[in-house]
Length: 126
Image 1 (cartoon, helix red, strand yellow):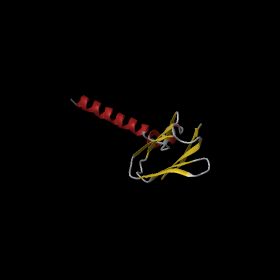
Image 2 (image 1 turned 135 degrees about the horizontal axis):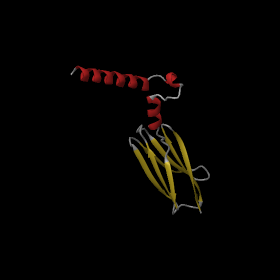
Image 3 (image 1 turned 90 degrees about the vertical axis):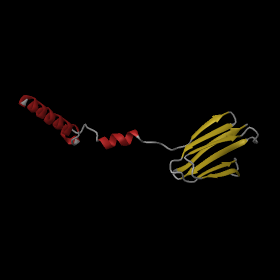
Image 4 (image 1 turned 120 degrees about the vertical axis):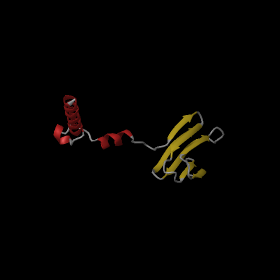
């Protein structure tokens, strides 16, 4: 019974020692280790730029708006005249399809403004 208790004590001590070395500072291992927090940060990095998909004379927009702040959608023609404007507030996912099938021949710029930046995409209609 005493030998079993000694074996469990030694095994527990070795386990704790190995865990302490594995989670210790990187300087112990020649600075080759990476801190756990740094690994987790790189795993959850998310870019919040909108996604534009062109299909013929249609432009689809998809934006992940985690801040749920105000999102402005605007469309300008080649002479910088405002053709379309919309303000969206409180939506986590902003989805919009712009149909240019009946638009005049021109170059249109779709502008998306949110809390994190301004994004542009152009459509050439012929």
